[in-house]
Length: 245
Image (cartoon, rainbow, N blue to C red):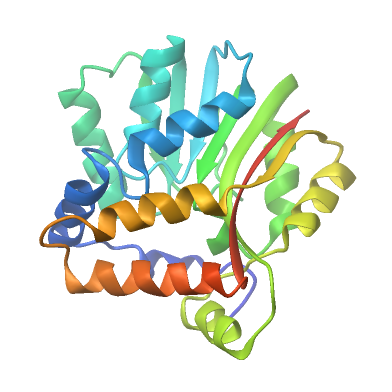
């Protein structure tokens, strides 16, 4: 597979309505990742003090983080996602949320889409593991930020190599970096580090809380248990990064 195979990625991300409904039951309305609104709020604290007028949400999904940030900062928020189904639902949800004057969603690839920047804040959560050309991604984000603008993202990192971890990465076509590799590449592009923190314990706590819920589906139960196992073995981390242009 080439560095960033949009077609393969797109096929992976055509979420069914059943999958989306289950994720929202577990993570909250308009969210499709572990921790939901709580995790977004915790992440935004790393970027404080912050009064952004324009925000870009990369991998905006169902729109939950974009809606939260639009209200929290009274900001204009642009979201971009490569999934047709997510983009369609997000555009329906923004009307339901009454935020059409503040939030808009684009369907496209962040590596090539002509976004209407610049932005004061770029946010992303659990997205960059899908993007193989990390250097191009970092350069794109640097160019889309205002001087002094902040980049805030959470992503999975590889901590220890193993045959099982290699199989997991290959199966899902992921591209994971070590935490230190992220720091090095961001600095090489010109970013200044504000925060680079291993938040695995926090995400593990969120995962265990979901496993304790009633009637969790077998698929999500399997995903969460395997994730916790990789955490426990020291193979995978959840890290939050905040850098400034």
